[in-house]
Length: 95
Image (tube, rainbow, N blue to C red; front, side, top):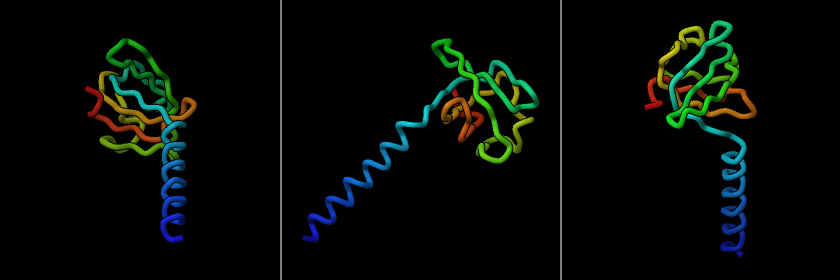
C-alpha cells in the first residue's frame, strides 16, 4: 500500500513539474532594443531570431540589475517568459 501511494505521489509530482516547464519558454541572447524605459525589450539569440517580451515592475524577477530601466542594448540576458511576458530576466548570462 505504501509503495502504491508513493508511486502515485511521485508520478503526480513529476507531471506537475513537467507541466510548468512546458508553459514557460526561455531565450538567451543580447538585448537589441529597449522600449518604454525597460517595459519592453527585444532579445536577439545566437541564431539571429528576435523575441520581444514585456517586463513587469511587479511580476518580473530581475537578476543582475536593480530595475527594468537599467536594461540596456548590448547586455547579455537569459529570459524565462510566458506568452510574451517575462517571468525572470537574468542579466549577464546570455553568452
